[in-house]
Length: 356
Ligand SMILES: O=C(O)CCC(=O)C(=O)O
Ligand SMILES: [Fe+2]
Image (cartoon, rainbow, N blue to C red; front, side):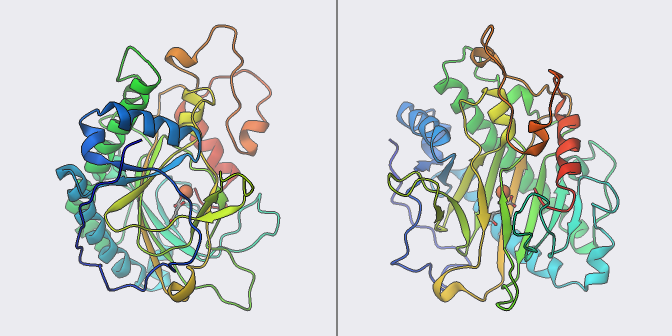
């Protein structure tokens, strides 16, 4: 297994936020070096493969490679942009509510209830989804507030850098799977082609103790790869520790390390060999509780015309096709192969009062 590097990163946010409680249990997810990932180190390839079949999550140390370090710097700039954007009056943010406009990108206020959440708790997270196609003029741009428009160069840099890093994760997975074509997953997620890729700026306000609220209800991500930067605890994933399997476990934020997870599209492409793990966000623990919590996310989603079906070695003759997570998949009665766009639209309809 790849070991974490010893590099320490001093970032502009270092020391400005209270620490994650020392004594609190957190998920022992693998720590992968971006330098070794980019160098195609064989042990790293194996470790990424194992992580994607078990927890479905791993840390990617961004501090030991130039492309990684640039992403950390950009994510920290976007932290500042989030604070500025969410400080706008609600009436201004509300103009960009994408659910009302039936768009893929724009604003989602807090207070959304996920249709499938048994306890129907409102969430405390607001976000802006900024589309890759809008940033790079692949498709006509959605309207965004001026603060976001003004930050287009930064958003474009982050988007390009995050997509490139995700493609190296996909190449690693293709090699680990023994595919002859290292580009097999990359070709389903091409940067230049229209897709649902987006940057998400997120702000979770502290929960109101008198109400039954959730930061972000339990979900799997829809796309191929998610690259997440957060600075305060609150993200939880399902434990893989014997005796605690399935219990919620915190993911501890680590300076300079992004949190990587796969989404449902990779489950479909790998016919279930790879995992898109359920996760949720709750109040930050210990001394971090009561604080506003920012996260910056990049979601890679398949090119709109990619077909949602197993590829390469996973497309075994006669093997039955896995039904990918979520209620929408349960409702598939035919053997229709959806394009990524059709599939995304179905998922949005299903979760239209929810989030990712
Ligand atoms: O904020 C986080 O830590 C996770 C966010 C997340 O899961 C999402 O936006 O899909
Ligand atoms: Fe998520």
